[in-house]
Amino acid sequence: MPQSEAHTKKPSTGQNSKGGLFDWLYTDIAIDLGTANTLIHARNQGIVLNEPSIVALNLENQPVAIGHEARLMHEKTHKKIRTVRPLRDGVIADFEVAEHMIRGMIKKVKVRWYSSTRKMVVCVPSGITEVEKRAVRDSAEHAGAKEVYLVDEPMAAAIGIGLDVHEPVGNMIVDIGGGTTEIAVIALSGIVYSQSVRLGGDELNEDIINYFRRNHNLLIGERTAEQVKCVLGSAAPLDEEMELTVKGRDLVNGVPRTRIVTSKDIREAISESVNTIVESVTKSLEQTPPELSADILDRGIFLTGGGALLMNLDKLIMETTDLPVHIAEDPLTAVVRGTGKVLEDLDYYRAILT
Image 1 (cartoon, one colour):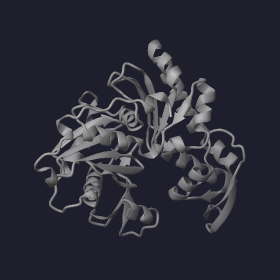
Image 2 (image 1 turned 60 degrees about the horizontal axis):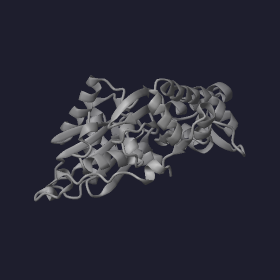
Image 3 (image 1 turned 90 degrees about the vertical axis):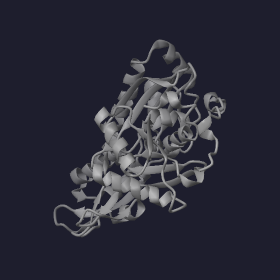
Image 4 (image 1 turned 135 degrees about the vertical axis):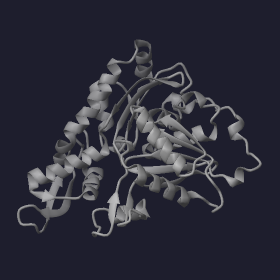
């Protein structure tokens, strides 16, 4: 681990860290409301939920399944049930369904039926508009939260991997999620420069679906594309290339077929999107003040989010920028871990709330 992760200041023990007389009546939570997955941290309990951001609805638009159960139904439903992903590009696209999803997931983590949600900290993309922030607040309040606080995703990611965001030192975070890639330079409890690219893991899935349609006349689903990306996806050549048998529907005669593809094929399929992410990192470095650039040269770039697990992405960024690149430990949970730390000590992190 870099030195910055090993030696961080211990947060102050403010009023929010002390137990109150009636705390047992409440379930304070922090939410990483992601396009692909939603993670929840409960006060004093850690991460208590990690489920896909998807809802299955009946004809009356009432939820019949949320999270893992709905994901199993995705692309396999009949006319009486449909599955909806209420978030697109990191923001709420379907207000009503998002509310159902948040409410349902909160129910899953409540240990006592009579407890209510007092405080809720929700992380949001750094590039969202005030209208989109309002939609997140409203959804959280309608789901039962008394107090709602928002924190930028890259800031939460930095806190989650152990960086001291209060220091007068520059840190660059690249958080690659399902719908967005958040790039930010952080110093003194604030974001000095940020860029929110509405491109992430979902776009890579779409690239893979289009590749099979164009090159193999094979129609595959979103879940299959996700599996192919996780097994074969890479940003730079591998030491040993791999292959995978993929099942889908032949577009010519309409019957099920299998095709064998290699990691090289998939690398070419997603190369345009991957290069866009790398170019955005380079552009962000060009916009960084020189003193902070010197800090980044010493400390390197930190990758978080599910996209950080794409094979050799760190190697490609390193070759392009000539800077050290660190993949966070457990990058999928970095944002919710940071959001949870903010929840546990709101006073100490008050300056970073938006």
